[in-house]
Image (cartoon, rainbow, N blue to C red):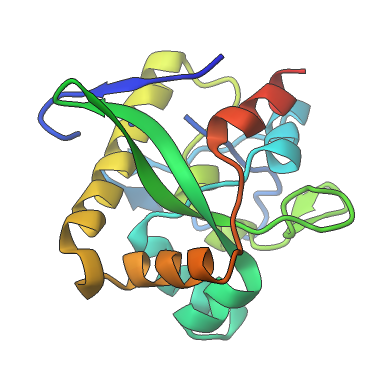
Length: 187
């Protein structure tokens, strides 16, 4: 099943986390507080749905992993075609950066022994969603993330996020669209 989000005033669900030992409890993004979860379904997201990054995730993850954003992208990210939305009646994709997969398992490369090795710095698409979240809340949070991505794409080449996505795309370091991954998650 393909999910389409209709954008009103350019304002679009995704995955979650576990191990809260090192989490910064007061982290907020777009006015939302980070979620705390640990269900098996949340871990399933890490196995099947690559988490998307918003622009503010680049610096946080680069710092956590001790690299610059270009190194982060080349080693740990993929270019995704992104969410399929309808903007002003016209379908379009909002390209996004997503966490890379482990080539042996297909799971998030940061999923180690059932725990997230970057949990305290996890991207927006992980840290601000959980599987048990009401659909309306997940959609509201998704809309906020999608709007941030739309703003970056409006900047085009003046955006590090967009440039990194283009570099990965040209290097053929790409992920499947979220609707493809969602099928595996729902099985």
